[in-house]
Structure formats: structure tokens, C-alpha cells
Image 1 (cartoon, rainbow, N blue to C red):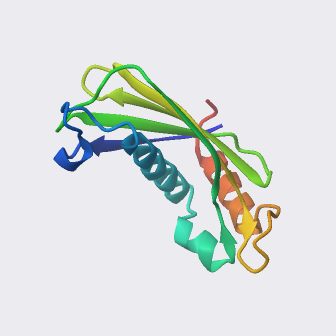
Image 2 (cartoon, rainbow, N blue to C red):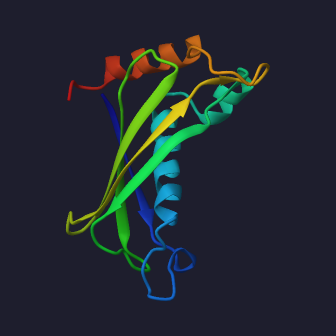
Length: 141
């Protein structure tokens, strides 16, 4: 497993009329965590795209436990099953940073797609190399 944590401060624009983070925003928070996890592995999304691959989301889910409000500091942790598969299965937890209260959990499945053909494909070598480099420098979980 590869795990990475990102902090996100809730913006006023993220909240709804009730003063809570709008439920759809959590998928954006998942995206930020996923992007930063790949960047921490040494593989920003832009590099994947330059190599001729896309990573569309195939499935996404979320479960909500408590509302977050404007200016809350959230800790979003993304966990990736480090497999050499055409699918990336990533789970997420979102917690209030100061209290560690669970706000939401979720999961996404992304699929490597060749930009040339539009069809699913095996992961590119740059992805496999990045995971191996990151796993080699990270203590076992």
C-alpha cells in the first residue's frame, strides 16, 4: 500500500446553504489527494498524460459521517494498492485535522487508457518505476 496525506482548508465556496461542505466537493478533495499522492511518488498527472495515457474514473463512492464547515482544516489520506494493474484502486479518509474526527470515507477506481486508442491498457513503465521508487523509500505500513 502507498499512503499519502494532504491538508485542505475548506473554502467558503465549498459550503452549501446549511453552512456545510456540499457533498459533491468531497470528490474534489479525493482528486486533490490522489493527485498529490501521485506527485509524491514522483509521477505527476501531467507526466502520465505526456506519456500518452489518461486515467478516467470508472467508479467513485463516498460515505459521510459528519459535516465539515468553512475554514475547517481537513486531513485527506489517499491509499493506493500498489499493484501493476491497469486499474488504480484508491481509498480515502477525510478527518478534521485538529480533532481527528472522521468526516468522510470514499473510494475511486481509475483505469489506464491509451490516449491514442481510447482503450484500457496496462500501466506504463513510468508508473511502475515510480511506485517501485516510492515503495523503496517509504517504510512498510
